[in-house]
Amino acid sequence: MRSLIALTALLVTLPSAAFELKSPDVQPGRPLAEAQVFEGFGCHGGNLSPALAWDKVPAGTRSFALTVYDPDAPTGSGWWHWVVYNLPATTHALPRGIGKGAQLPAGALSGRTDFGGTGFGGACPPVGDKPHRYIFTVHALKVEKLDVPADASPALIGFAINANRIAKASLTATYGRN
Image (tube, rainbow, N blue to C red; front, side, top):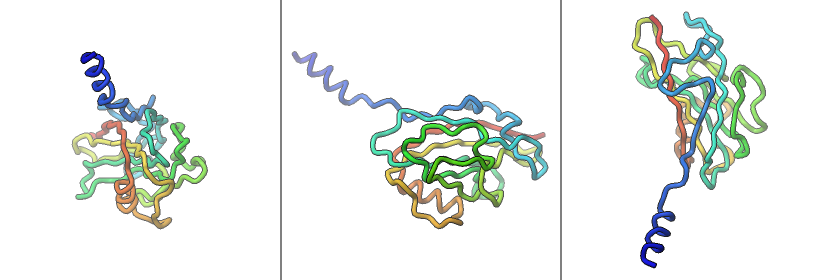
């Protein structure tokens, strides 16, 4: 009987499966493909957002946000490449290329990036700099909508995401130019 009680206690305390982000286009720790490189600022690529999918969503999730961030950009504050928020809780994937102006799921919004506009902005580190990290993160949020102005900066949206996050899942890829 003791072993049955111990086994039951162990099963109750085991963590549930971790929230997970996957992509057929972004391989963790590997360089991004030319399709995910910016077109402009001296870079020449497809500027195409990758296909992304997430599962094992935590209980209580009421919406999602997606961010793509380069912490290695020589700005003192990194570089926001893509910010999408107010994704409905029923959304569990974004197709390849949706960051180029294709319609997001109903209610979802695309925030400004550090390139100055909305939508996906691909990798474009300075020539000769070490390869930069590009962190793709889906955030499970406890609110249906983030209360931010339509022209909010990526930092303000990030603040609202962090204040309402239940869990996050990330993929980190790299990209450098010689």
